[in-house]
Amino acid sequence: MGARLAILMIDRYLLGKDWIIMSAPPRVHPRNGETVSVIGAGRVGTALAVALAAAGHEIVAVSTVSNRDRVGRLLPGTPVLPPDEAATGDLVIIAVPDDVLAGLVRGLAAAGAFRPGQLVVHTSGAHGLEPLRPAEQRGTLIAAVHPVMTFTEFDAPASAGAGPRASAASPSLVAPVASLPALLSPGDAGPGAEATRTEDVTFGVTAEKAARRRAAKLVTDLGGIPEWIAERDRTLYHAALAHGANHLVTLVNEARDRLRDAGVDNPERVLRPLLQAALDNSLALGDAALTGPVSRGDAGTVAGHLAALGATAPGSVPPYLALARRTADRAIAAGRLRPADAVPLLEIVQAPRERV
Image (cartoon, rainbow, N blue to C red):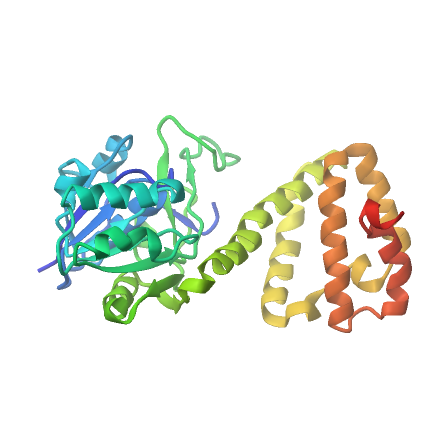
């Protein structure tokens, strides 16, 4: 019989290629397990709740500030309760914004919501165990369990050209097929959804020895792979992920905008194969994947780029310069660009204060 699952939802993230629309609960595959509570009915909390339900856990309570409709749609029949009343699970997952995490845990601990023997985890990438210490003082085990995956919310597309939106009046909830496999079979997916992929997402886990076994079991129940992160390395770990994923979104959108400025009607079609190849090659080859004018030391070409950007989109010049400098440094260190050949290029891309 599936484990009972209490969901306390204080709305962490508002929840495409590689995304599945979760418009209805998935088919449940019963599995023995402990009772679970998830605090936060935003993008991450809801995705985890649906995945746990698919793994055989029973959702018995939800606490949410603003997502009652979402809970009713994705977890029909689940009671909505205040957080301290819903925190009855043997496992408590807290998926709330980073800045409110510590205060929420302190409040729940002061209210007597935690009990000895529970495992209390949060899903923040930026924090380690410190925000959970008040729960630990109540006799719980604690762990930081962060899914290394982006979560997005968008309206169900009204046309083929529709895409993600920052907010929506009646959003469709989606989860990455790579991170939460088998939430829906391909036949259940909504319009535009792709077949489920088999790759598992990594979860960055920080836990002391007593909690490691149970934290690892949570990750495997979610279909993921645990990557153990030391408490002292948690901030650096999260900075690396934010730098790679969040800044990638900005970089791609900068490229799309500049292609539109150049008269390209469908920049997505132009960029997709190039960016996919660059990503695959960089992950497989490291700095050996570098190509383009900076890696060749083509100072004249880079100067032309800067002139065109300055005339059309001056705001794009500083990030271009910063990335060109870092690319040149890495190309030199990797032996892709000889230092002597890099001199004219470095004179162009150096920071203005360095030119004096």
